[in-house]
Image (cartoon, rainbow, N blue to C red; front, side, top):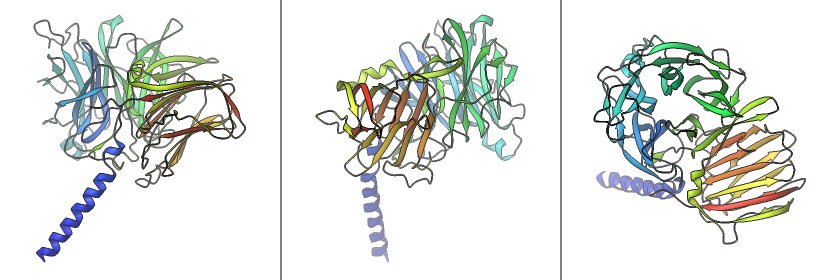
Length: 502
């Protein structure tokens, strides 16, 4: 019997080793942040301070599936090269550490600062699993912690929670910013099917200001991970309210929507109640902005979807973040839209490339560089002479294909991952995702950023954005473009992107 058990164990180990050789690091993103091991979801507390970008994130250090949440931590000088740091916040008697934000309290309104040191203050949701089982509806409340050593160590405030739950089951994800006109902090909080705004003079005592959204936008799921920030359009201040939602996204599962409007320190008034999507792909959720970045508005999201996040075939980690994106505004006719484009820091990993002009495309035209690009990592910038059909084909020698294109009849961009490699871990993964073309311009301009297991499409100056992950058997190192009816490409620029991970 012992010999049989030993044989079984040996066979199991061999199988495990073979599987590990087949699946783990081959899907590892090379210039997107992913933890070395274990589970990650929402980015939290993103902050720029003393020349360093801080990324905190929902993290479970015991497994590669969701579990009791901690705040993981990573730092970067350019939002491209990230260094993983020790865990910042651990669960405690008040509960798990759910999503939230962080601010640099430069005026020391909290009183946490000492010896002239600016306190960094994290504002987060405590999720109490004991109270949750009691079904009181009061198991989520807001707490704070502070750091006096530039985010290396954190001390939880002894007076937590600073904002008790009034009886709302989903009461979470505080995004806090300073509102200079009234010298107060504004908290944007997700409260089930709407947003509730609170204010505070010191980050410790909070007063309710107003609510927004019960009759606006998409309501296919619970509202989560909001953000409120000012942008400028033609000299006028416009407030952007981001609201993530799960489920109910445009291509199923989780996604982010946004509203544009005015904010007076108390009330957000939207220009329109219609649904506008931050990203039409399947894999940009819980996207929020870095604080303390001056005139730049920089957004980063969790590059996955709750439809399959716990099942994606990566090991020993799960999930990565999107690249950082710079936000702006653009008018199409009388309607104002949010734009997002790759942050300029992505230039830091540009490698060899080429530029071509005036390509006539009908039958497939090879766009891969002459020497090849075995990694499949690249950035493509393309401009067409007309808004006609075309399709980019990312492929490999094993027959995997990822299709990205524009269909003129439906006036839609699309990403089709139905033949992209491993898709059997979730029934709805291998599908074609679509997004409307919002621009009325007669020419199409797009940027495509490809990593080992993701593509990010920015069309028409970032008016239409799509993010999708995929799991090809080998890198998608081949690239071509084709057009059924034929199209003229005015210019194409291709650059290999260099790995940024250690």
